[in-house]
Amino acid sequence: MKDVAARAGVGLKTVSRVVNGEPGVTADTESRVRAAIEALGFRRNDSARILRKGRTASIGLVLEDLADPFYSPLSRAVEEVARTNGSLLFAGSSAEVPEREEELALALCARRVDGLVIVPASDDHRYLEPEIAAGIATVFVDRPASRIDADAVLTDNAGGARDGVAHLIAHGHRRIGFIGDRPHIHTADERVRGYREAMAAHGLAVREDWVSMGGTAPDRVRAELERMASGPDAITALFSGNNRVTVTAVRVLSERDRPIALVGFDDFELADLLRPGVTVIAQDPARLGRTAAEMLFRRLDGETAEPRRVELPGRLIPRGSGELPPPQ
Image (cartoon, rainbow, N blue to C red; front, side):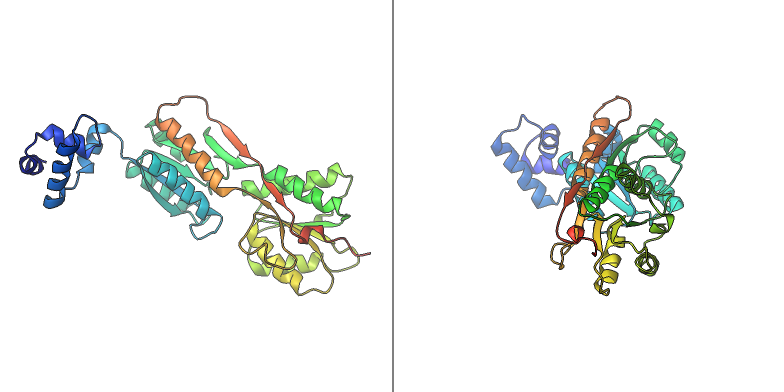
């Protein structure tokens, strides 16, 4: 900064004002300072600035899988809010492994990020209590925290599933199957709850062999769907618990002569181009990410209210697969 000040013929304080975007510098002086900065290749020392201000201007994002299309718009929304607030975003994947989530979250804390946005894999987040007490703001997104009180931004998973199943019932279906993710996952548990509630609300019994919870590997989903779709009491419709289940279900159903109606939770790419198009309950991952990040920065700006839980609605998008009638 001394070299820049000498070259531009100004004081150190003037250089500091230009570098930090502060007022009180004329356009001509700012132009001379920026020319000197360019000529000398000056770069601001953020490490020193961080030590003075006590903030790192960075936040961490822990996702299930950065490669999952659902999380791309969520991550981008968090990044945009961070950029607007002058912060960098560091992101990593937990791969749905609790130990990896904890390792990644604590590694980000060790690098002194100002806050965390977490899509949780763990069922015990007490490991974060010392970090939160030390001032690291934390917001959970898509799923709530476990065993601690913390801000959370979620989709109304049970409500969305109720709407999707009610849609199938409205089109004449009574034997409706459900294939979902592992039951310990909050979203999977909420969606199967919504399925059961919709069936009960319409006076329809749920046979337990119509419900399958487990991993979303294509082989498992295929085997379960083929089982449900066989025999005298075969299902006439399926509600799939997430986009990975839905994609496999589309492949299986395309191979069958007898049509089975399908509504899936989560939209996915090209769902509208298939024939028939796939009816879905669409989440808004960008809104989830944006809402969580905005909540985080309000905490960083000093908000001290009790932890809040925000639930965003899903949206039914009828495209054809969920409107197929049962066979006569």
